Every structure is written in structure tokens, then in C-alpha cells.
Image (cartoon, rainbow, N blue to C red; front, top):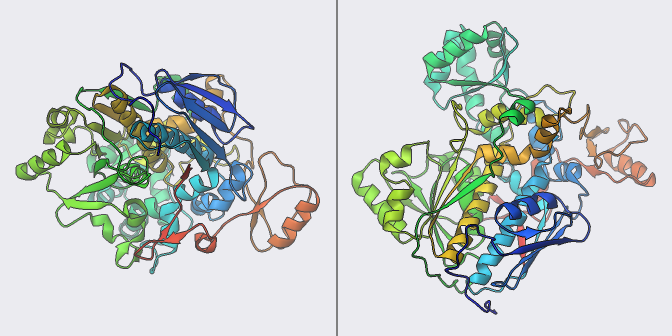
Length: 580
């Protein structure tokens, strides 16, 4: 390994990439414009022209090249969504595979490419010679569905039925809204106020509770009927009295009108005592660094999982008795397959954050860590004495990372969960073409993308610390993820244009025994409904049109060759980057 000529430590810089230059070359790649934009937001200078090969370097570094590509089978966004199971998962609510009208796989690819560049520069600064990385949209797509894929390969069935159905709801005034609560008593009280049948309320809770896991919620139609019979004022009163929350679906034009132009993360230096730490023996960019993660559900655990894949030692802070989600069905060797998809390979320490003694233990652990990461409710860290000013006092070099719902950017925002943020920011409109009513996807789009952006933010903070010697607070959010995902559609809305994709956009073609997806904007010369999928592929290929079979059962991906099994027998998707 050849270290850089000058250690990249203790320079005066306000942003991680100040003084570095980016260059793009080659044919366009997935989301190369997003990569260039994020690099410029982080301080790099360079041309804006597209290109799938992006080079980033400066006087302190040897330079690193990242190559983005679609994949081995896929040709564009539509075919990536078909080949990786995204269409299958997004389509569960309606009962048939459906393409996301937003460029979800490409967006994830772009964020992962920025991660690769930041990790490569950080590795060089720490004495590990990384010169290049490759990111494919197919691998990004597999990462996006990794929890659903893990469940498909588990030893037992799902905790709730996988069948069509789910929110949003429509009230008597025509207001379309999302409902959110994590409390079964609040759920029952909300529907009780609307006089919904008690049996339907009872039967509806489980599919509603597990819709994050199954991407559908087949609860009784009578719940939709009860909502449709109630005026919006009554719906709001029922939410206030029960403790549940409701959020009307906002349009992209509304989001464009209030958009503040903020980047998806914020970096705030808070100390000046870091003198650099050499990497460990392994070649991984983050080898030798320690991440403390006090995360729940998806967003923060995925952020920490990605940092672990890059070589960091990740220590999960779990409540007494361990994370209850370890037991969430379906299981592999007695452990939740979904939990393993986000947390395999992490160490765990049980800490009772309600106990003063255990909070002191956590502060002592943070004093020796490089990163402290959490996604607690707003204000909770300060209430516990575990906010950035408290932990930076014991470790001025700490990168303190908070992955939140709203980042404090919106007044009177609802609960910061995936589907509520989708509803509030216009994702429900952007994700569906014009002939489908706006509705948030029940695939956890923002939790996953928020986790990716959280890792991008932490890597930015680590690189800034490496170059300046200062500890950093980094904030990212689901709101930031929504703004990144809807950027193109929101820009169209801001210009007074129709922000939605045309009717039928990215809708796969039915065949006699399955579905096919063709590249975006391709004209299909034949009706293939009476042909087998294999015969339809042959027919289209003779006409010079490429197509990809749509994965409808995620279990079919388990034998694709790219999916491995972990020590518990749970499916594991490949690392999203390849470093050189």
C-alpha cells in the first residue's frame, strides 16, 4: 500500500472536498449528474457535463475514479427495477408488478458512488491506497430490496398476509391522507371515533403494523368505508383525541413552493483535537474506526450497516433484553431475517438509557469511538444528556450523526416516518404515473434512501475531520432523501409543467405466464399477452428491442448467483461497491 505523500490532516477547510476537483468522462452513467451535484455541495469544483466515470482528486490525494453502470442484465432504470424485484415489491399494494415513476435505483446508485469517492479519499488519507471503485444500479437495487429478499429466503412465512391493499385513505371531503401510529390503542381509538366495526379494527391492526415489512396492508374494506364517510374535520379530531397522526397528501407543486434549497445533510464542526488514526491491517477504507449505533427500524441501522461494509467496527446499543426486532418474523436460525439484513456482523451492547449509570457508560464508550449515530425522536438525545454537545465534551473528535425524519426544516411536521414523509413531500405523486392516483409506495423508499444518505453524511464528516482535525456533527433526514428522490419532478412542478410521468410509464407488459419490462420510452410493436415470457423475449429481440423478465417472486433471485447466505442461513446481497 502506498500512502499519500502528505497526511491529509489539520488543513483549514470548511467543507470535506474544498480544494479538490472533479472531472467526468465517458458515456453517461446512472445519476452521474447527482454525483457531480453532491460533490460540488461538499466543496469540489469541476465541470457539470455528464459522464459515467467521475474522477476526484487534489494536491493531498492521489485521486480516485468511480465508475457507475447499470449492471450485467439491465439497461436502464426500468429494467433495473424489473430485474432486482423493485417492481414486484412496489406493486404488492395493487396486486401486480409496477414500476416506480421516479428513478429510484439510479438515485441510490448516485449516492453510493459519492460514498465510494468519500471512502476512497478517506482511505488514502489514512494510508490505504484505494484508486477506484465501481457501483452498479443492479447492486443498488438489490440493496434497496434486501430486507424483502431476506424474508423471501427465511425458514418461515411472513408475520402478516402478503396481499393487495393498503393506505392511503380518502375522507368524505375528498382529502386523501396517510395515517400513522405505532400504538395499537391509538389505532383502536382512532377508528372507534369514526365508528368503524370493532372486528375490522381488530383485524386491520396487524397488516397495518407490518406494512413496513410486507409492502402491503390488506385490511378490511370497512376501514376505508369508515374513513370515506367522515368529514376531514372529524378525521383530524379523531387523530388528536386518539394520539394517532394524519397527513394529507401534498403535491409536488406544494413542495416546490416551500422548498428551501437545503442540501440533504448538514455538517457542523464542533472541536479540534483529531490528529489522525492509521487504518487497520485490512484494506477496507474504514478499517480501525468504531461506530456506536443507537438506531431502530431501518434508517440508522442501514447507515451503520453500510459503514460496517466499508470496514468500520459497528457496536449496536440495544435496550435490556436486546433489540425486540431480532424476533420479528420471518426468522433464519431463530433470528429475524429482516433484522439480519441490516445488522449482521455488528457487535451489541445492552444499555438502559433510562439509567443514569448506563448513560454514563454510554458516554464512556463514545469517548473512545469515532462515530456516534442515532435516530431517536426529536429532543430525546438532549433530554438524556446524550446530544452532540454532551458527547463532544468527552470526545471533541467525535463525528456525531443524527438521522431524523425532518431535520427541523418544516414547521408543524407530522411524525417523521417513511410513509408520512412520502405523503407530506409529494413522493406519492412522483412515484406513480398520471393514470394512477397519487399514493405513497408501501415499499420503504425513504427509510432505505435515508439510510444511504446518512452514510454519505457520516463519510463526509469523517473526511472533514481527517482534513481539519475537528470533530463534526452531521445531520441527515428522510426529508432530505425525499427531496433528492423527487428533484427532477419537483423542478418540473416549479416551472409550472406537469411533474408526473405519462400514463402507463414503466408499466410492465403482461405475458401468458409472467411480465416483461422494456427500456423507458421504447415502443412495443407487438401484443405479447398470448405469448410465453420466453417466446415474447424472442419476438421482441427479433425486432431489435431489448427486454427483461420482471422478477415477481423474490425467492427466484436467491439462485441468481449474486446472493449469498450468511452464518444464519439468511440471504445476503452483495456489497454495493467494488474497490480497486
